[in-house]
View 1 (cartoon, helix red, strand yellow):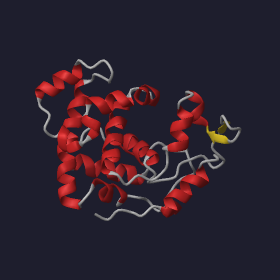
View 2: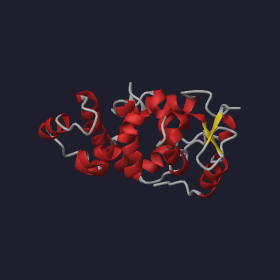
View 3: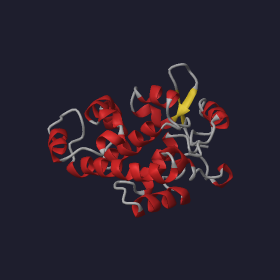
Length: 203
């Protein structure tokens, strides 16, 4: 059984929450709950890319700054960015100023438009990779999976950047495509109920 820690209300939470006080709210309100909104899905995959080599606490602390800098992660707006916008973003101390990662967001916004034109929505595409829960390993025992590897490979084939298998697995955990809350976590049942009630997007 994956380890847990006591939360502010005395109930057990996934052990990673102990790493920072702000993790509890993120864990309880967002992590592992299903998301069908294209903007939120695009934001998360971008932020997971920015996290590469860094801590999630760094990204979570700067999330509002990222949203302000990238037009709320509206990929249609970001797809129109040019070198002037890259220069602006590289001067923005409120975000992670990494040229490769910034350029990846611009690239991925254009790839997102292509994907929506093909599949109807990002949500329909990503949820098409939802694994059968019976095929999943025990919660929080792996950092990649056969599905995250397959999704990563498909995205890369489509020209997406900073979408390696570990990044994609973290994306799947956070967006509720899998329920990876620890077995003893008080939120595991809530996340599972939300997944059961969630209508899988098809277009």
